[in-house]
Length: 307
Image 1 (cartoon, rainbow, N blue to C red):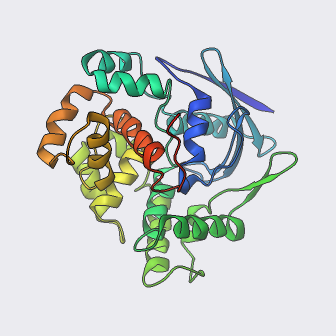
Image 2: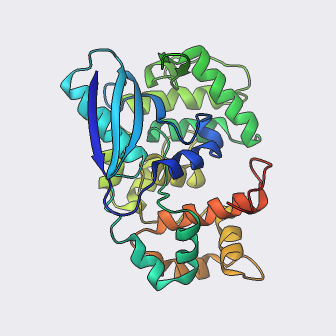
Image 3: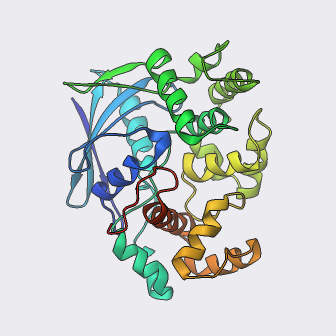
């Protein structure tokens, strides 16, 4: 069995990440938070499906590649890099506590969610597909469609006593004609995203290497991807660590809750306030959103006020 280790620089909690995934509807993750994290996904580049079991170590995580049974050295390295990005371990977080030292509100959130870092979509490709699937329908309805796509078109990965279906690889979506629940032009847009992924236009390294505005502009050239979806792909798919979404309405409400404001801040005020969060603005927005969901249960329908 192929194994690898990832070292966390700065605070990190795999249990906190798993707890976050339980409430992250697009992931559909239902594994126990105190057990190893089990992931199945198409690996960026060659798009071979991999099954990985990740468990906590004193200084980060250790990963075991359960599927395929005999991965090549190149595949092992690609899986390692993708898990690194999914768990935000590819970012040096040693300076994150200093953000709390500058901002008492952030410090309180860091204490409430110790070691929580953003857990991304398994790839920018999957984030883009989610954005298309979820357009103009409820989030739980979209999650159900995404789950059925995985079950019917994705590759099954055995984790011993249970099976996890990976989201379909781009070559599957590139030939998609129709699928129950996908209305309008969504099948057409998903086909285009499949082709774009195969062409490298949704590659993590390529997106992160470009200036932020240029990366967003390139993403909005893809069919079905508007400004909101482009930010989702870049921040939550590629794992860009230091920007705030300009088209996410929940963030302003989350900030108002965290800072005790009488109304959500304007876009300009939010940009000004977030300057103190550099160079981890994406990370802080996650803490804000986690608290909003725990206090309101607006997505899951369950409140966790004592979290």
